[in-house]
Length: 251
Image (cartoon, rainbow, N blue to C red; front, side, top):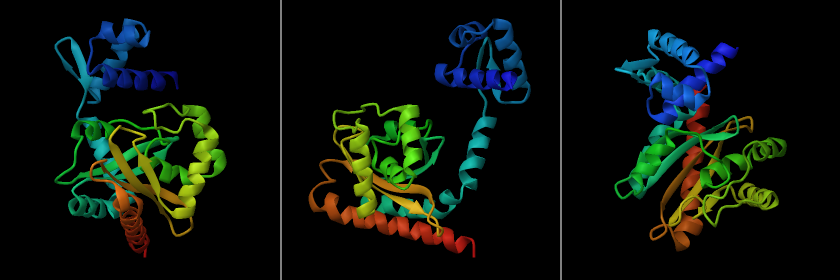
């Protein structure tokens, strides 16, 4: 088990450093150069790592694993076309997210013709995210058991992302209750100043929650009645269609 854990640390270190030599990676991980070199050699032999001169970087085989996981996810299969259509109709960014180990993973994003913030959204696809500061994350949290939400808060905290982010436990639970009552979640500049979003949970026929869908855009366009009622209704409709797609796929 220790060997596996060290191999994971090596991969994570290469990801964080954007590639590194043995000495730099050993110092970053606080491991011996011999141990790092041995793990890099094994990972290289199995095509998970590529060596260019003295530097190692993550190999393309990892991308193939990621594609396999993404395309094999039922929510991706049921929701991709719906999110594409949502982004096309609105011109903004559409999102699909799942929760795993208490973090949000951006399963898919679709970019509309007027969408802004491409570098930020591209980065979202590369890492897990906190759930408390986004509409899609709060939509997911709203359908989880209370003890699960408590564990997520204990494990990851409620770090402030902007001065609008909910950072109080009781306030978050009040917000999640409101989300459950109305069927959708709002993000009013809680993740990025000047950005708003609306999200809705995607549930299974037995009442479980498999993920969430959302749309985000600039404050200058996501405002007034569109933000408060029209867009929430649209997002809940999209969530319902995705739920039906998943249900019929198993018939």
